[in-house]
Amino acid sequence: LSTFNFEDDEISGSYDVIVICNWIHKFQPDYLRQKFEKMYKFNLNHEGEIIFDIIERATPFHPYAHSVENLNSLIHAQVTEIGRYIIKNSNFEILHRQVLSLKKI
Image 1 (cartoon, rainbow, N blue to C red):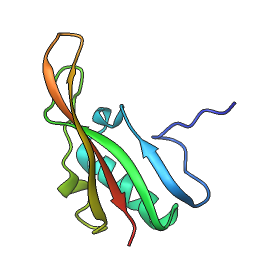
Image 2 (image 1 turned 60 degrees about the vertical axis):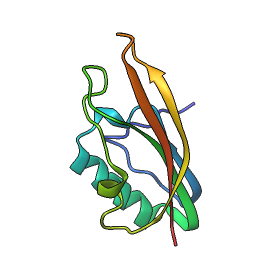
Image 3 (image 1 turned 60 degrees about the horizontal axis):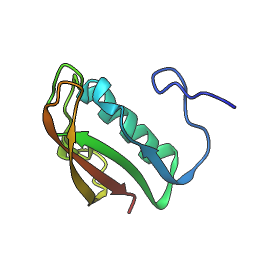
Image 4 (image 1 turned 45 degrees about the horizontal axis):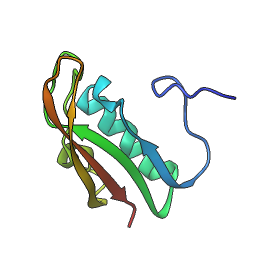
């Protein structure tokens, strides 16, 4: 069993799908965008997809809210919304979670 540290480790290999869900709200938007660009360029096969989720707004439990427009601004992937869900954090705040795909074209 191995552990991957998003901040310190590099992804090796090329993949059809890279799934990054339920924790990207911990990273600053520009840092996350750079990581997406690197994965898209070096680790995603043609027509491969990065699947991820975003939360509508920052909260104490979700320090950063991201936009698909920012994450896709330099790679120009095909964006697909997979789903939109209502969630509650531990303070019982209602938030909208959006699951998206960036497809390499």
